[in-house]
Length: 447
Picture 1 (cartoon, rainbow, N blue to C red):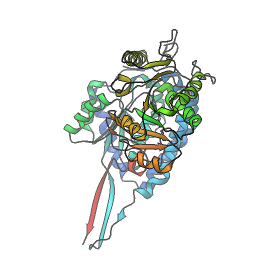
Picture 2: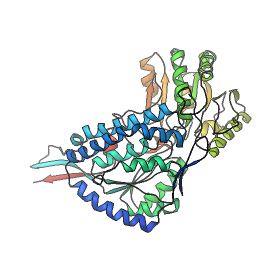
Picture 3: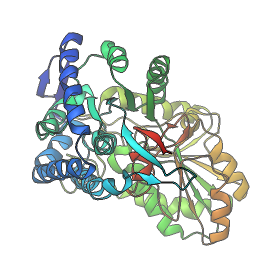
Picture 4: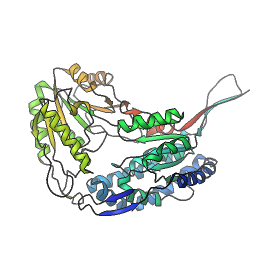
């Protein structure tokens, strides 16, 4: 069952049953027919169809943002930012894809030799609840630009906003929802030509194995436990503000947030005073209220998991500086929680913490900071705060991550590839690299 409920009242906002495997197969047959017609269009014509979709998305962005706020629980301003970035994403690819997909001539002894970019067919995707518009479009828009079709299984708990998003899709754009039960996902992977997944590492491993068994190309954007390194010469006030924003925005429910703060020993205490002062400014409340700066978590079981990670880490010797308790009342609120002296073997260091709690550790020097940062199953992103550009570049090359940000919290930029290594997955989204993930890179040689 797909069901959206109000984040505070628990009232049902929308529900629909899962479709049968046979109903999905019938819809998929029609989608494959539409994909062939769509692929026959020029890249410029496909871009125009997406540009028109972007206009409809922009017109409805206020309504969709409010839906996300009520279903997911993120602050309304955060949901509005998601929609604005999603519209920007559509327009970025509509503008750049025709040139990026043009055949690339390569001089050889042939009369004509070039590289062509052709679609794979239908890409099936399983998407998460935390950014229900952005996550779908981040994979689907470049795949569509290349001439693919996309069938998307949305998260069950954000069914209302997912349905509203797909209502904006015109008949000419081969993008459809797949209202499937979990049990039918394997069938869908087998029936399509490629697979995309955003979610937890555990689920990603299982689904990737299914796709690999069918020899289906896959892209996985999994969890993150981003390190936030602060060296002695850093601007501590700026670093503290950035760390607080990165960790606690979206109620801490972002794979790309700062989750492990690594401090040079000599600046640890002054940084923590600044950081805790920033945390104290956060205000929990109704996510529709502009005064709210720390939203509720999405579900009760997610809050219980974060709380268990915090309790286990304290039991392992960490010092609780603030938070660390479940807030009574309606809504799944959890306070901004900071743990210092976190042991590297504890749950909060080795697991992804998907909620408003952060682990702090002390480093003897810069090399020790890098070693602590790399002591994680995950490798999505990292930040380094320092005034020394040469040191930053040297350390960045040693970090086992898909991205490193210097004097800024980790984020994503449409023009740069997004993705990770290790348990954070493989493949890239955004930029030209995301566009080329779901294409047949074909060599054309003419005597």
